[in-house]
Amino acid sequence: MWEKIQAKITAAGAQNPPMAKKISAWARKQGLAGGAAEQFGNAKPMFYGLANKLVFSKVREKLGLDRCRMARHVGCADLAGYAGVLLVARPAAVTKSSA
Image 1 (cartoon, rainbow, N blue to C red):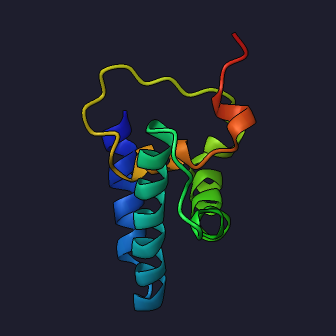
Image 2 (cartoon, helix red, strand yellow; image 1 turned 135 degrees about the horizontal axis):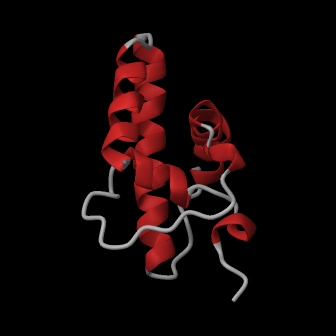
């Protein structure tokens, strides 16, 4: 499933103008760094919130993930891709379970 999301994002991104591609690449780096920071309990990069506001929120909306309340992934080797960034970039109240 995540491979299909990744393919859809890549196909849509290929049609973007050069400046949008640069912004997307920058946002992806921020998201990957933020995901790694979250895993290790460190602070997210300074511009992580900006990347979320400019890019991730819009991509999640187009994919319908803005309505997703919980996402679970078990044993997925390649969530380091863009789809993984989208899940990590969600607000904390949405991604954490209330166990």
